[in-house]
Image (cartoon, helix red, strand yellow):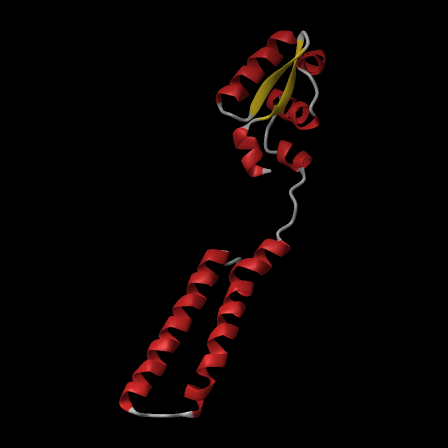
Length: 137
């Protein structure tokens, strides 16, 4: 099971805060133990480890997504349109594959959902990934 980095980061900060409260309580009671002397050294190390385990390591190990695999989430004409958009080809290229009417309807449907956008290039339109599709990439 993969634990989100937010949970690890918040958990480490909570643990450090509880440790600080524990040490403060002992100092208030006049109890001096060996860990009290190590506290100034332990807290920065704990913060750095919490950052590494909670944020940095998951960000570094996150794999790049292949846009071609993303197109596998769609079926039929939508898959073709998304592939054309990811490759940066024109609406005419899609029309030659699936037909003009089907291409127009498919692109219009994907435009309303924010997955594909059309950019004017001369007398044609180039398909590019929309805002929602860019978020996933």
